[in-house]
Amino acid sequence: MFKGRREWLKGFGLTGLVLALGMTFAGALGAPAQGEEKVTIFAAASLKNALDAINANWKEESGKETTASYAASSALAKQIEQGAPADIFISADLAWMDYLAEKKLIKADTRSNLLGNRIVLVSAKTDADPVEIKPGLDLAILLGDGRLAMGAVDSVPAGKYGKAALEKLGIWPTVAEKVAGAESVRAALLLVSRGEAPYGIVYKTDAAADPGVKVVGTFPEDSHPPIIYPIAITTDSKNADADAYLEFVKSPKAAALFETQGFIVLE
Image (tube, rainbow, N blue to C red):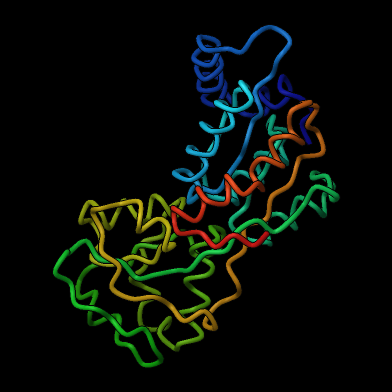
């Protein structure tokens, strides 16, 4: 496993190095005072709207800066494993937090279950009819010649939840060949919003954040494993503000911002 920022950049490859240096240069333009270090958060893509608002509040109250990277939980966990400099990790499922825990890459005593969510079926058509999501639903007929946008079903949490629900309802065999797997749930949402896919499976919170889609159905909660977002501080974090930031994210003020975006606050 790569150790530290320098080694991580070496292992990241030439393209990654160029991008990383660009990010570093851009960040330097608004760098905090000497001696302070930004809290770096790696968070599931579905958290962007809510966490951006929370980070703005954190800065307003504490005067401290943050840097947030949003992507599929799978991609972020792998980056942390390779030595990416993250202080906080928020996954969209338990599996990828467990993955890092098994490798002792998170501080176990800082881990908690932060949020819950729901998965929904969305359409780009504002006049799309409601869909009752139940066993026997002929989703393939609804799709026609189009594709079903989802996060990659073997790695992206939203995709895994979606596949589990479709399997439980007996729908998966009829649509498996029609799935357009995306690198993150937000990428799947964009496929629908742009009209590149007639339907997609995303989180309820993502649908609420994009006026270009309409929720046409909600998957039964018992059709898939519980959707849980765990949070933890990484083992390699040396940032003195990480603990305070973690507590802020779990505060009533942050809870209100999460709930505004449609998340279910668990603690």
